[in-house]
Amino acid sequence: MIKVAFSLLVAAGLASSSAMATDMALKAAPAAPPPSPWDIAITAALMSDYNFRGITQSAHRPSTQAGFEPRYNFTSTLQGYAGVSGESIDFPNRAAAEIDFYAGIRPTYGKLALDFGVWDYYYPGGQCFNTPAFCGFATATPLPNGNVVKQNVSFYEGYGKATYTVNDNFNFGGAIWGSPSVLNSGADGIYYTGNVTLTAPGTWLPNGIGAYVSADVGWWQLGTSDAFYGVVGFPGGIPYKSYANWDAGLALTWKAFTLDLRYYQSNLSKGDCNAFTSDHTATGVATTPINPGGPGSDWCGAAFIAKLSVATSINMIK
Image (cartoon, rainbow, N blue to C red; front, side):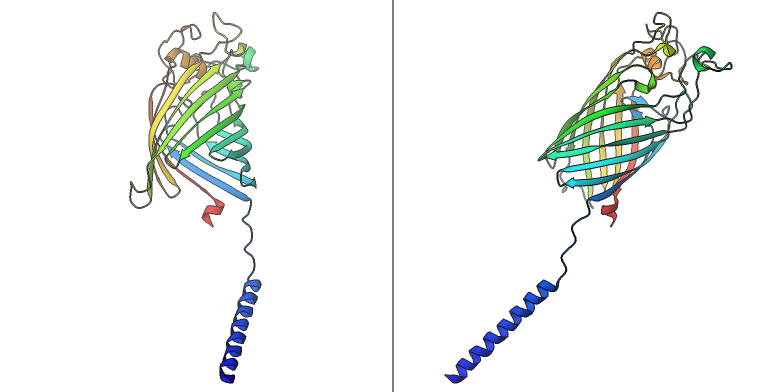
């Protein structure tokens, strides 16, 4: 009996020592640091054409893009951000590039993600093409095809976006963008757009390759320009033609890379397209009320575009 009692005491002592050692080990282990609320998104792309709302920005030539976006998560459902992005372009005023500055907030409510912010489109290095009275220097002339364009076509927009994620394979959304002077033309503009995305289940393709199809449809409601762009019949400014645009495409993804193959189209005629874009490559004659005797532009016509992009962030690289 004494031996049994002694054995029980020893076992209890060993168990107690083991528990104490485990407890001490747990207490000694340092707590994992909380995740940083900061991150920086990084993007880059090479595309066969840079299309913006159904209109080429690179004269149907290849374009490149690069950008970064610092982000701060105030909470798990509210993110603030500010970013800069650069794109190569081919504009009538010979601007050197497009540089975008933007900032906003992204609140989320369950499956609903919102985004509110301001976007500034900056086009440095432009030249004025019009008469000396409008450009302010004696040697000023219109473009060789007769079009005119301001030295400064930079402008900004405010925006609100919403995306609802139904499940891992389906989401849809919409956005509204507004500017008091599109392309610094004096014409106000409100752009409405809707989109839908269908993502293939992860088991459909091998080796971590993903795929999705998506489509966008938009309507740009445009106002009247200032007198710089006036024409016969509208000397005080052109009442730009509001128009619809849409695109649809297939994208393949692998890790941080996306290959997007997409078709773009708008319903602007060649004449109305020329009046809006001042296309320096426009040719022929495509007369409309706002483009009397002016050339016709194919910048707003159908286009098939291939785009290879990469998108990652500092936290994903770590």
